[in-house]
Image (tube, rainbow, N blue to C red):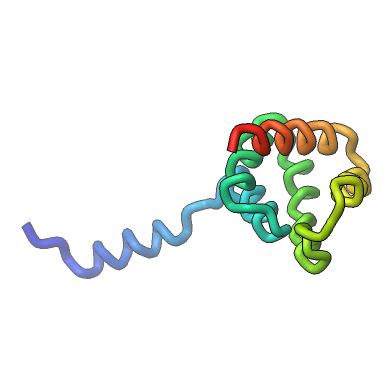
Length: 105
């Protein structure tokens, strides 16, 4: 059975338009912030169901941390930056996810 070229092109275009999930967005933001991909994936999975879409959007601003090189940052400074987002729930969820993933991974 031969599939017409137009059908293949259409399916490729539709696949490229697939929405990015909130979990994927937060995983990318954490990776962009300098976290290890495995830790970022673990944290994103744990955080996505505990935070609202608005809170996840706030977290996307973490990608700016890349400029500060998160590997050179103390835990206190990292938590200060999370706290600066102005949402105690984000701080709680990120801290719990980070600790859990650091132990699990």
